[in-house]
Length: 213
Image (cartoon, rainbow, N blue to C red; front, side, top):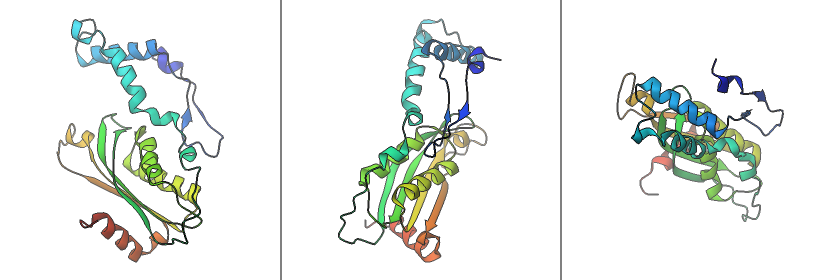
């Protein structure tokens, strides 16, 4: 077994707000050595000029691409604005762009998220919903899990009367490899509370897809 893999100490956090494994991270040097191994596995020479600095670049890129592991989504939604003059109708933020990486092949999937909720005691800043999408997208993911996670954290933080999350994405693991079907998209949804009613789902979907908004 690779010594880097053996050095990982994995345990499930007991914190009720945690939704990820805690790991003892490899050093920068160990990460770069792993990249060199993958370059060799791909059939190239990591010591040639064009690839000499690639391991360092890849390690730094991974810190950015997977920064969601170091962010707590509950902290993002910790401030709720209660003075909304009795507003009770749907709040919708649509067309939130994101990119993530498939946990099965570690290749990108890219798309848009749409989030709606019916307030109960208050609302959050609209940008916070976009940040929640980024937190979960910047991890190794499946689209189904990401959809459920976004709905769950909003439900937990706001305790609204209902949450709706719709995600549309193209998966490179399907377009770049395997069946290689470019342009295919996947749609996932998660509904809670009032949005379990079919009429509310229709209203949400209509508002998401309406060109006039």
